[in-house]
Length: 348
Figure 1 (cartoon, rainbow, N blue to C red):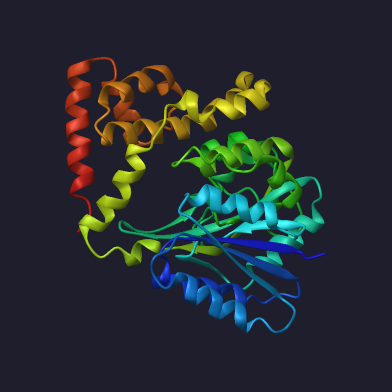
Figure 2: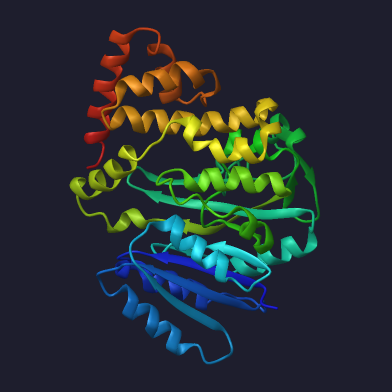
């Protein structure tokens, strides 16, 4: 049986698709893998590039190219999950890439920890605002990088248990995720059987990955490999402020209410509604959705969400500002004006 099925949704990704696929083909691993590249109605050369790589596979590795009408990344990923033949599944976006040992390290970890439904690696983010790492507590060359009880880690030592080497199993996924937001769409390898049970909600066009991860985590424990084996820097293709704003406005306009976002989780795992750690994890999502709502001009809705869920917001500057201003409609309106101006002028 194939070890890993790699699912790559593509929509007009010709600019960086070769780099993405080269990072897969160049993996330093003895593990078997297959690719399911789902072309989501591209109008550029993405499909031709994908077929070119598929034609190169002459050593038994399977490279499948599937076409569909444009339906969004959740539908594309679900088609890949449904078709996957591997024991494990991982997503990789066309504008991102893996380091050469990603497959070997993640598959080895899951084989060694059958109690885990998934494992994540550190993500290196190359964005408009600069370079960062997720989770920040495991950033390379920081005092927090040691996996065993550094100064920062003493604060969260109860959230995980030690294992051999530098990797670890998270003891309380929701508490750790609420603090670190450690799971990235393309930084995680998961059980294929569990992924097929969960699938992504195709009606969500923003934060559908967060909903998927929080529900998947209810199926088993989660591992963490403190190595930056995934790089996200698709913003390098955004040449102008208009390009960046165009992409972000589509996200802002699609932000649902938290009650709609959490609907499936509550229906399938009602016991989580009594878990404060789960609510703290949701608070990270609620803060993001509320911010997107106010940026898309839905200030009144955003204030209602802040009043309902603000106590669970992460305590970053935006979360604190929204909680400070939510009690008065005038201060809320002024804050919305300020934050919209800030977002529209942050890209240089």
